[in-house]
Image 1 (cartoon, helix red, strand yellow):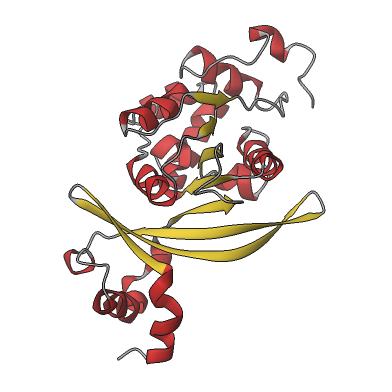
Image 2: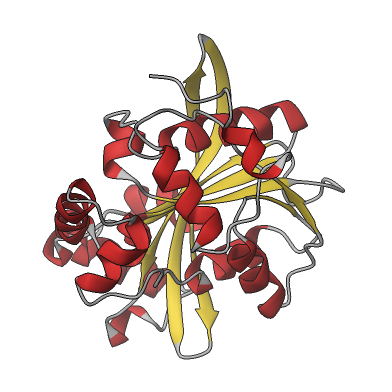
Length: 260
C-alpha cells in the first residue's frame, strides 16, 4: 500500500498517453538546472515509459498511479533505458518553438567522442532552444547507433575501423541503415504541444515522421559543425548515403573546416 502523502506528491505529475494499441506513461515536469557553457539554464524535464504490460495500460486514474508506483521496484527499469524530454519556456503556448529529436549516443554525448557530431549537436541544440525562448529536446534512448543498440554499435565501429562506412557496417551486421522510430516521441510531443514546431535537424526523415503523424511542421533549422579528421567520412556519408540535407555550401562546407 502506497502512503497517501507519496500519492499526493506524484498523482498530478504522471500522465498516461494512449496511442492506438500502445501507451506511454509520462512523468514530470521536474525542474532541471543545466550548465551550458558556464551559465545555468533551467529546463523542465520529463521522462516516459512504454507501458508494455497490459495492467499498466488502463491508466489515468488514482488506482493506476498507485499500481504503477507499487510495481516500480519489480520492473527492473535500469536494465533498459527510458527516453526523456527537456522543455524550455512556455512550450505549450508560444507561437513558435524549436524542437530537437536527438538520438542517444553513449560515446558522443557522454564521453565526448569525435567519431561523430552527436555531442556537439546535443549541446548546441540545447543552447539554440534556450536562446530562442521556447522549445524541447527529446532524448531518445532506443536510438543508439540508428536503432541497433550500444553493443551492436561497438561491433559496427570495429568494421568502420577496417574501412567500412557507417551504412555499410550496419548492413553487414544484418541491420537496416536506419531503424529508428519516432512514434512514441511524437505522442509525447502531441501531449505537450499542439501548435506548430520548427525542427532542428539535417535529416529529412525526421520531418517526414512528424508530418506523417499530423504535426504541423514546415520549418527546419540545420545543425552542422564540429568537423574533424575523425568524423569527416562519417559526416560525408550522412549526406551521400543516408539522405541528410547538405550544409550551406554543399561539399565545400568541409573544405578548410577539418580540424585535428
